[in-house]
Length: 192
Image (cartoon, rainbow, N blue to C red; front, side):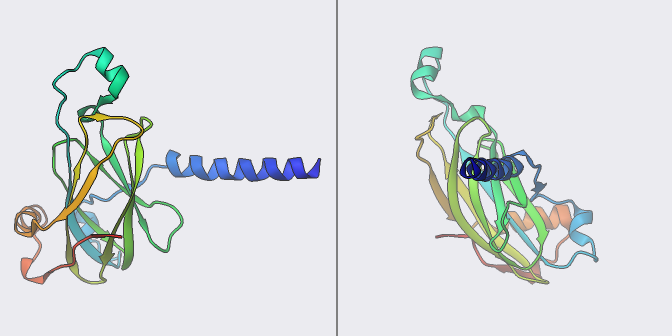
């Protein structure tokens, strides 16, 4: 009887952890100009972008959806970000398909990773994309480009690539945030 209760307790604890992680609202990685300029928050500033590219299928019948999965362009894509020393995700980036999402964030110094992409409708995939936040620096971490298939299902394959689009990103954040572009350093994301 004790073994049964012990197993039940372990299962309940694991379920609580999973529900907590997926039920939480995460802080957006896109921060406002006020949050970035807050002098009480120490850390470094990182900026970059994510682009999820999806082509619409030529045949969009209900039968094709049943056989091959939903259209990739029907989803919003959520990317979870965690400090490597942390246990749970702390930030997220929500990206619409075929629209490049630029983000700017002030985070504690350290190493971070984008560890999961999911749609919230059954599809998710683990990613292993690392970046660093350098205290008291403004760092460009690159553009994460994700190529999704036309239709998304459990076994969908995707392609991840990191590109350097620094000039475009700098002009955008200079306009939106007023950053001094002479102080920007480049340390691109990388996959492990």
